[in-house]
Image 1 (cartoon, rainbow over the protein chains, first blue to last red):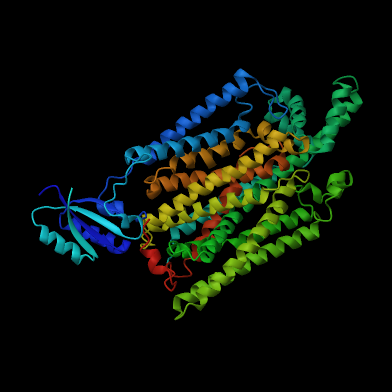
Image 2 (cartoon, each protein chain N blue to C red):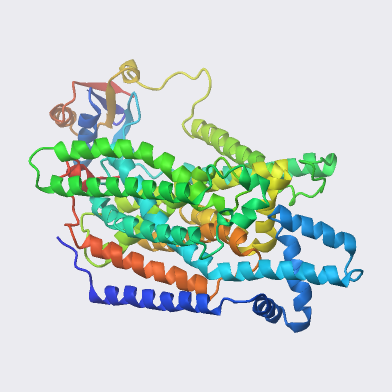
Length: 173
Length: 459
């Protein structure tokens, strides 16, 4: 019995958000919610832990910044000293203004790309992976809430119907 | 609930004005009257014996006018001791220049502070108009605070106008293009006289001030009328005039920044200067909204303003600080990179003579807010907003200082009694006018159609 889940389908994000709160208030465990677009406040309503991607973004940015400094210093000063804007000082600090755009771009580049890669890894996504969402309607305009079945299936089904679900069904997982 | 101006705050602002007034008065009285006095002052400052030499050296660095550069060449060619007579004459010219710089100092201290506190309500007025024109829902609970701050716009702008008028009447040498003698020897300024002449300059200033004042007057009037209204006609009128004002504002603000700030250096120009000054006034204005709001909340007013509103103001403070830095750097890097003599002198003067305020301002206006306000939780904490806000406000005072002082007083700058006095005087006046204005209307714009959305605003 424990591997059974109930799928409740909704057609409105506001109804879904309210339903999530009600189901959680009744002490049912929501396994997952599938939505066609990000629903504002849903993570909070589901009681998910706060994302740590912001901390990683900061660290990735610092990595990008360090790479840019090392790279531009090697290219423009050490390996092949360049005359920058008629000021051949061959010093990193004195030519710093010319390098700032590079540092900025590299910081953004590293932060953005590594964040996306981190997100894919954490979400277990990779190319050609088969989709995990149980109902293809959730890629169109419907919202699906997956709730673990506790002791009483019928009571759970009734509760979900009451919260405004347009379809409630029992599935083996 | 109406706000009452607490007696202690009133006294505090009056004390600030009094202290500031004496500071400014001291600055004017202490300014030298003759060349000899000026030279003696500089000699004292440089410890006796080195005085002559130091005063001389300092002039080599203020190569902001062509005349100056020519003198320098002549001087280098003749050598130090070969021609005593020429040397003496040379020195007298330098002495006169020094006298002008030292006489300019209290005027510049007055002007920097007057301009700085005038631009705060102007930035707030732009922010207010943007919120009106965008039909923003979150900021309605802050409208009365913004309207209170913009109450200082007209008095503040008129004070700046009086200073400009006095410059036009030759009470000071802040704007050297107003001096017929200078223009006669300067073909570059001669080419600009059709734009840079005193009557047109003052006429433009009056036109800008009256335009801003009219918008302020009508938007406030409609905003107050909306409180009692049964329909939304006042709100709609406010929307329309706000959209129109924003067009007027960005054009006049740009021209204002060329006129009132950039023309102090009549040889130098930067095409993004208007945006640069705008970013400065915008971030200072938003910071001031946050500071006044947090102050009023700490006194038990504005109970409908919550952390989410402060959070949004914090996001604006962070974002516009970065925007300001972007413009500062865009201006700096292009000029630094191309290294064209008539452009790059502007930054050479600032880096050589104003090293600490020039780079210190960058730390205060960019690095500090960037690091402090990056964290989402910090933007919801009043302590961090106040700390970052005070640094941002002082940093942008330094920004205006760096725009005006180098051309007005050269290397004879110091943040001393006249500068601090000027700042305190206008701070006192600003507080007095703003908090007086806040008492005149309920602190909640209760008739606004978005007021409920704003009260329930959750980030």
